[in-house]
Image 1 (tube, rainbow, N blue to C red):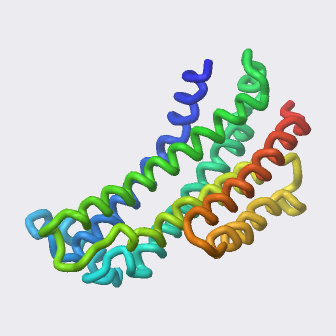
Image 2: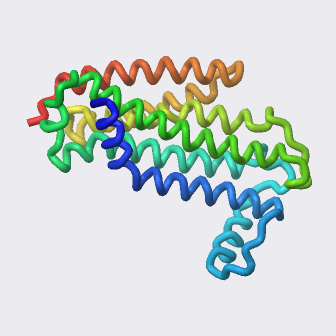
Image 3: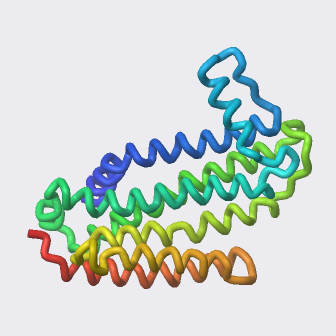
Length: 233
């Protein structure tokens, strides 16, 4: 039953994660183009796209220290975490599949927990894998004419670890039994505040991660309560 539910969630969110992979790949290619290490001049359309990417302002000398990379990574992560959180909840409402889903031989909380685990896991896997790929490329001798230390990736990793706050905020927004012109958007608005709180927390990655876990735990409790209180008929 767990495997079936996981595959269902992956299938239903495949399109948006596909866009996420494409957007992250574009960002990585723009970095490579900015480092003057890749050329697609022989492929007209792809060459034009990569040429536009090279104009995005990435620092040619310190890839992970350029604000452009963090800005693009943050923007893409916010869009896709919010998109998936809403899709996993509002999508069920629009299709009218909540009654069918919640009458499976699993508790309601376990079903919601699987949804949350899939959404969080896929985000962390895709975005974390992209950071690792770019980091490994940067650490490989001869790939670019600039110094590199893994400590340079700290800024991107801190964004990566706090971004699930937006996902849980969007999920709670989508599952709450409230009106859109009332208080339904409050969790998503709160997620913006909590994101800046967690990302600006001092003492490095560990404190950012600890604060994120605490915030996500609070959101999770609210999601479980909302899922129990809601009338899905």
